[in-house]
Image 1 (cartoon, rainbow, N blue to C red):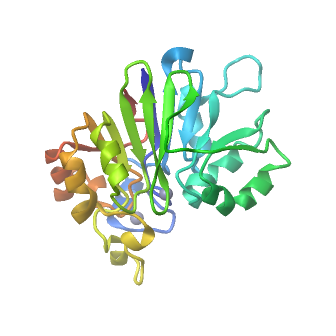
Image 2 (image 1 turned 180 degrees about the vertical axis):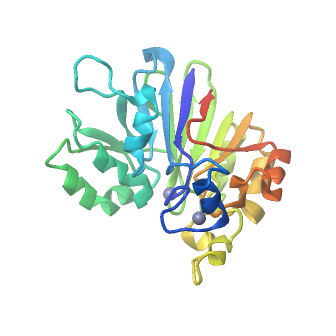
Image 3 (image 1 turned 45 degrees about the horizontal axis):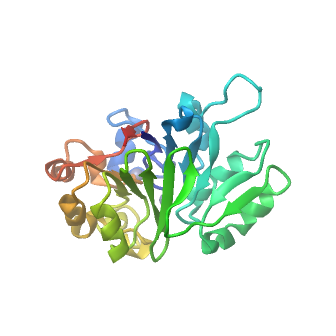
Length: 282
Ligand SMILES: [Zn+2]
Ligand SMILES: [Zn+2]
């Protein structure tokens, strides 16, 4: 069995975001809805008793996420150790990569899977980590390769990022993890058609959402995020996956409010909204 653990379900900035007083951020500060940390997902397979966890993106909230997730904490012996085997990066966005820096005290080099342009874009981080544990870069491919245990994975190339599809080699089940999607490519459609679980980019409900809280803000599409409404909603509604979950949700997104019409629309479509700590078995 593969286990997927949502460490952080919010887009860059988190919920609440430090400089934001939108309705959701205010609701999170006053306890009406729960705060959420920045997007990161942990995945493991059971052949090694869930001893090896891989992170899909490493957010600046990683330290907090580890402390609230016993599975990711060091075992008793030896005194310095970690069950975190490495990181897979969807792209070089700061909210996906800054967590690498927080892992610098590792005893061994940090294994990071990424495409070449992501590696190039965070060369500065590579330099910062070099005097510490350093990074052992590994290439990703559109063909399945073994991560460890019973997990295979492959990358689905997108215009500004990659998505990852994970294969439970024991059961043949597939999970699609796509927290940053700018476009529904044919390869993405094909991957979603045979996936049992889909974690999808739920950054923005509408294309102009950010403009309502910040004058002159770029649109969702200009920020390389396909909005839910008029974008990914119909696609996910039609997908045969057993579980479909929006994650990487920006603090301005009305789906964070359980009494909103937008949330009701997702419920009707059989789509969930990720929360920190959500665990999904495959
Ligand atoms: Zn992000
Ligand atoms: Zn906000």
